[in-house]
Length: 397
Image (cartoon, rainbow, N blue to C red; front, side):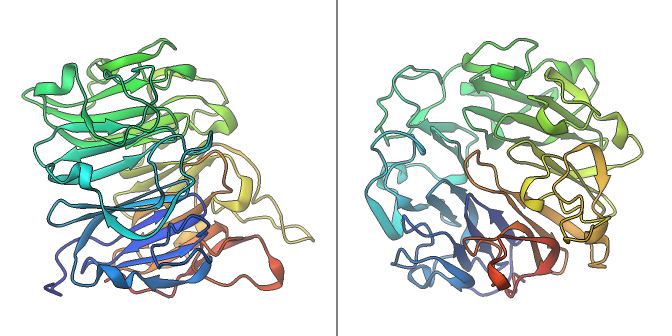
């Protein structure tokens, strides 16, 4: 493998475990490991970031983490999977009982040059170099335009509107999928899956079996450039730097100052003076990164994953667990004195959340839940979490 840095580093705050990819394509993993999802050949949790040795000589360009499982994509378009030996039904039933503790080539994907993977709770989606979307393990209700059995790990092309429209990015929520597509008229977003809470963005709460165009962006005169799918809500950054959110509004995760649901994308007015370049969503939490590196967060304050640690009271907890209904500057990241370029946060309903902030120079900072070692640092005195960002001892440059 050529060691010349050719890619942006990446950090993934998965459900209880974490994956970090360097600019050379080397992968580090740490945290919960009950299903072998760290890829080290064991099932012992580890707090110290450790490279996955069996991938030596293979350059990894993208990673995805789900409950008990990890997927890695190489520069040759190959997919390596490990952890629970099924991609769907993460939390339920008897599936996923077999554990795979080292990265294994996904044979069912060998004829597809994959560039991105996204793991939902009941399904996995992959995006090919040609812009086609494939999904598997949705169960047998055919919600995504093809009939599958719950244990079906063969990829099926997503049928319907996106068959002839190239997709450039996919994002998976708990039970729904978003796709950023490239059309002659510009960029657009399609959604399908479960419509509860209005998270598909069509003005209703009905399920969509096939991908359906979210029309609201045309009405807002907004050109989507980045799409994020939280467990129950979604967000988009437009070319002009505006941020839209929609879906379940619990804990203020939409940033509109309330906890109302929104069934179509709505511009976050509180960020009107901010030009956003990046957005990340989790389980009722949202982070926005501005073009000057400022970071804003809002939503559920549980496990201190929002990074707001001000006004600490006598017990040291302060208000860092308070829910935040409108975007609030994460001042603790300002103290890092480096430009933040990427945020990743846990997108799972059954794990306490943690958050990563990656800086321009490749430094990684972590905060939130750390009880399984997922922060990449040892917490003293049995502390379950870390309120302030602390640098992880791993060089991603």
